[in-house]
Picture 1 (tube, rainbow, N blue to C red):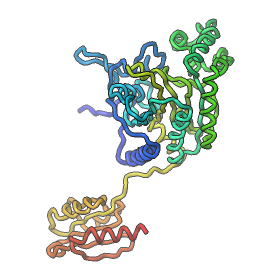
Picture 2 (picture 1 turned 180 degrees about the vertical axis):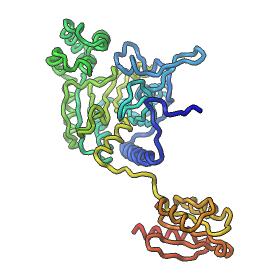
Picture 3 (picture 1 turned 90 degrees about the vertical axis):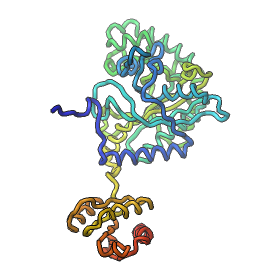
Picture 4 (picture 1 turned 90 degrees about the horizontal axis):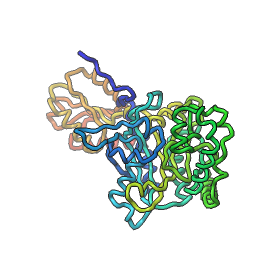
Length: 426
């Protein structure tokens, strides 16, 4: 018989791991709530044109997408990132017509990229992200960074650094494009095949090359800052001033361009400085984008957002020694003594209805064996359902911490457990 395993680049998250994931996801949802962001859920696959737009030079679009068609229908692609689908939905449902913009949206879910699997990088991975669409302001850019920064700090990550840059407005980028084309024209033949493609599609992406980063021509690349318009410089200065006002430390990195072609003006990346982070140091990253709403048929509107890989976040938390906990302990364990049939189940249902995490014994076993299960479950209270007590409509209740045991009527069971656990919490 064939033995099946997870496909390459994927993983199973077992209960011992998902408890920690739930804790992180709950923290993210809580932080999004206080920042005024609401959840949006889009399909895990879209029309390929949602992601593959015009002359896109990114590796994600050119190398990493899972694209397929069924019965010769239109080409579909498993989503490799979240922004495009959210903006498509924003336009399709005419959210741009809302009386109060910007729209503050967040998403959390699976993404798919065909790339070489390695620690912290999977072909199916989970990503959280936000999109703030419908208004352009340097203060929104700063707030966006603050939200992500607040999440990682609340999680307990301390060894992080904010890198930030500006790509400027359309005029700035046109100016810089011409500067780069002229600068690289005599050396592009010496660069990797991807850089040759990027030179034609988007020369700004040459600065993001990992293969040729040590090539001599990369040492003296003209600074984009010299091509910025006065408006772009002023916009970026306001972003930095807002970060200063919130006490968020940062470094301006002139080489930071980000990996997707739709970014404009502010771009940023928050990285881990922990020595174990290695090449997987990015915690979250993003920036402002103009033109994406129009691409999907909407009005001229700007947006800003970031994405955070949850697998990467979990690894960095582990590297910094942050305990996210395991499988939650039970509140109550219901034991069976004698032939009590389904009574333990009925008692467990009553306790669960009151909100208590409850397990119950389902097989004939000795009290000693059942108490071992109590120890493994971490239950704080044990309810013992015995034949003689059950005949009188009663059960025995034992408080593990004090070892005190009492007999109560089943009708008063929840009240008794309430009192025991409330006293323990004081």
